[in-house]
Image 1 (cartoon, one colour):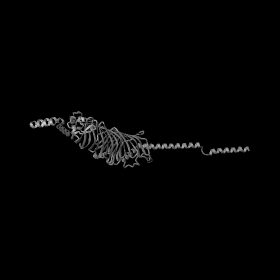
Image 2 (cartoon, one colour):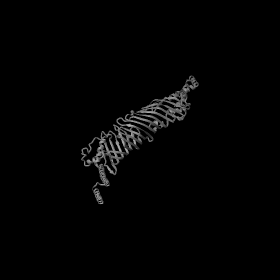
Image 3 (cartoon, rainbow, N blue to C red):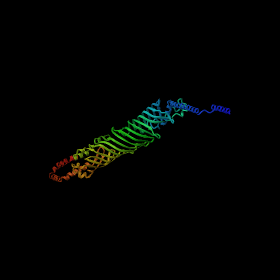
Image 4 (cartoon, rainbow, N blue to C red):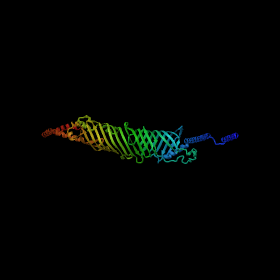
Length: 499
């Protein structure tokens, strides 16, 4: 019995050894096999990717790609394009220059770039990734004159598929078809826009710019500083900073600060609707503008101070009568001198302060449309002496509708015969007031105050001296020969008052 059991155990052990020799691999051997297979696959993919990347990079450095780039850019811009040889140093692309001459349907006549450096970070979604581009100088001319007639490209009749430098068919699906640009720095931007007659309308000179694309077609953020902005019929503007957003149809000025006439600053924001009929819409602030920069040589001797203003500018820039500016203006540290009427008042009142009238308050509202300026709510005040309020219209250097109220302090009238009784008859706010009409040219204005003061003085002198007038009349009747001498003495006594 024990012998049979032993035999059974030996048979079972033998069968167990056979199963181990002929069964499936163990789990550890299966894992090693899978890892080995994945490693081979990864190496294959890695080699393939780098092979493709290397092939793409070699093609991007080839003459074929440069020719393709020239053709594509030329077709896009409707221009004849010249591009200097591309040089690659690591992940940076260099080109000494890029030139384009616009065809009749192009947006520009000339576009040039010098000293181009672009960082390259690969190709993604068939787009050449250029996170940063730096350009020494860009020159652009948007004139209609000087456009280049359409010429046939040197590659136009070439079979690009069989061209010796072309990419092989298997590589074409990996070659980029466009670019994705990050930030563009331009050290000096020079831009000019001329009208159909070749007259310069707008220009940028040596302006440092930084631009980057935004979401949306043809939408860019463009910031500028330094350099100059030229606008026809305006003084040249030095750019302190200019923050804009541009798309195909509009230019938005988010913030701007520009200097002109050395110390004057204009700042603000707004937008320009581009196109055949451009429209302007701006909110602007003017500070520290010396009046001598605006006035004729005659008026420079009469009015001084610094202008400050808050105003809007709206309308079409192509039509001077369609462009309207509206706002309020203030004069700081102002003074008026050399005015005949002030000299007359100084003589009447025996107060020399009237000869150079310091303006402690000077402000007005204005509307300018073309050559017409409407001034309203005008206030000119010299503390302790006088105040002028009113409105007028200035057109073609002529003053019309000049209606004012002139107030003087009571003490200034004590030496003017009849002024308080006949001319300055209304009391208000510490002043004695009289109406005043001003007309004529801006260089030689006319006023009606002098005649009224003269008439009041003569009337007052006659009324205040009836006895003397009666005695003089009697003497004339008794001795007519003395009449001439008597009249002369009377005129001599009055003339100093009215010079």
